[in-house]
Length: 155
Image 1 (tube, rainbow, N blue to C red):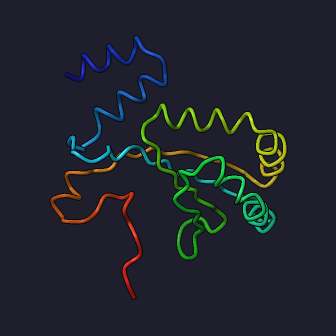
Image 2: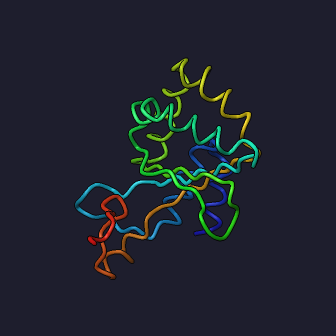
């Protein structure tokens, strides 16, 4: 199976290869409800002297970001442990094609691509992106909801 996957990956585009890897690595069994999709965690390591300005820009362009990419689940900073000058963005997409479509359409909006992105890059030292698939069978076995249904526990 691995040899077949390797040969297949070598013959396809990077996008298709990534799609195949996501499917191959997913523990998710097909369910009657919508597929769990793909989660993207984008981490921006900020220049310490620019962290406040970056956070301000994220807030100022928040409505635009949410309008262009309604898949945003949350924005996070580190309070204790790890790198303290990072911001993490968590997104959910139906699949990799959906992610590509959203990102392509965002790039066509001048306010985003020609204003926000160039200004924000001034404050970013490093960025990375990780894609995850939900371990649906583990959620089911533990009796917990799908990640798209997560809510804070009641107080």
